[in-house]
Image (cartoon, rainbow, N blue to C red; front, side):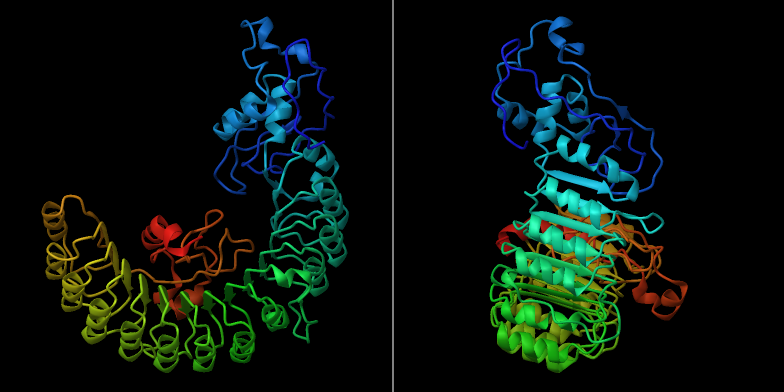
Length: 563
C-alpha cells in the first residue's frame, strides 16, 4: 500500500490486487476536486463544497483486467512499457474530468491515477464512515485532506477520524470544517498517528483545548495553525492554557478567529521563536496585554493582522517592538488612533504593506499617515478604507514612498481631484490604483493620463463624478492601460479579511481584502444581518478591493513576500 509500482508490461506483470468494491456514495459525499473512487459519485471541479444540484456520474470498477483492455479493441497498448511513475506524471497534466475518464481505462490506470492523488476533499457526513477504507485504499498517497460537513448534517465522529488517521499517516495538511461530533479523544488519536502534520485548520468543531494541545505535543513539524470558532473553547470561563508543546519549535503562522478565550494561546506565541505571522480576527476580550506579552517574548513577527478586536494604541505600541514587521492590517479597531500608528511607523522601518480600515471614526488621519510616509519609505502597498486624509498626507506618501506600487483609496470624503493629481505627479512606481466611493471627477482622471508612467491598471467604482468620456479619453491617451469604471451609486464598503473560505454557518461577513490571495471557495453576502447593514451600512457590504486589488497584489506578491 502506498508503494510505487514498477512498469507493467502486457502479459508479463502480475495483475494488480483487487480493489474492494463499495456501495454507491450519496451524491454529496465526495468533493469535486478528486477523481472518482470505486462505485462512487464525484462532482466536477472548481466549485468548492456546495449543494448545487448536478447530474450524477456513477463510476464502477472494471471487474477484471481484460474486461476493458483497449489492446483487444483499438490495437496495442503503447503505455504498457511506461513506468507507473511516468504515467502518474502524465496524469498530473490532465484536468479532473480527464483523470476520471482515464481511471476507467483499465485497473492499472485506475491504480496509478488514484495513487498519484495527493489532495482529497470529502463531505464529512456520518454516512461516509462505511466507505472510508475503500476511499483511502483508492487514494493511498493523500497528504492534504479536507473534511467538511454542513450544519444541517451529522458529521463524522471520533471513530471515523481515528480510522482516517490510521489509513493516511502521511498527512501533512488537514482542514476540518463543521465536524461537530469530533472530541478531544479523536484529535489526540489523530495527533499520535499523523506526527508529520505541518498545517492544521479547524473551524466550527466541538473539541477544545485538550485536542489542540495534543496536536502541539505530538506534531513537531507543525508550521501553520488556524483555529476558528472552536466551540469547545467558546465558554466564557477560564480556558486551559494552550501550548507550547514540541510544535513551538516549528510554528511559523498562527490564526485565531472568533474565539472567546483566544488569549489562552499566549504561552504558545511566546514560546514560538520562529513565528512570523499572527492573525487575530473577531476574538473577544482585551488584546492589549496579550500583544504586550507576546511582543516582549517574540520580536521576529513579520506579519500581523488585527480585525474587529478590542485593541488600543497600547497594543499598537507593543507591535512597534517588532522591528522586522513588513505587513500590518489594522481593520475595524475603532480605539486605535494616530498615536499608535506613529509609534509603529517610528520603529517598523521595513513596513511594506499597510491596510487601514478606519471605520470612519476619524481617529487615524494625516498625522499617522505623514509619520508612515516619513519613516516607512519601503512601503509598496497602501490600502485606506474609511480614512479621510487630506492633500498634505497624500502628498507626503506620494513624495517619500517611491516604491509604492499598489494604492487603494476607498470611502474617503477628502480624496478629490487635487489628491489624485498629486498621486499622478509623484507616484512614479505606482502600478495599480483603486478608487472607490471618493468625490473625484474627470479632472482627476485627466491627471492620470499624464502621470504615473508605470501604471498598468486603474479601477474606479462608485465615483459618480467620473464619466465614461473621461475614461475613454484616458484609454485613448494610454492604450496599454487597463481602466475599469463602475459608476453605479455608492454601495457599502468593507475591508474584512477574517475568513479565507466559504461561510459555514451563514452568520459571518464574507471575506474581503486578503493579505495577498483569496483562498478556498466562494463567499456570499447573505451572512450579513439586516441589523448590521442598517447600523453600519457603509461598511457592511463586500466588493471593496477583494477582486480588484487583492489579485493585483497577488500578481507580484510572490517575489515581494519571498513566499
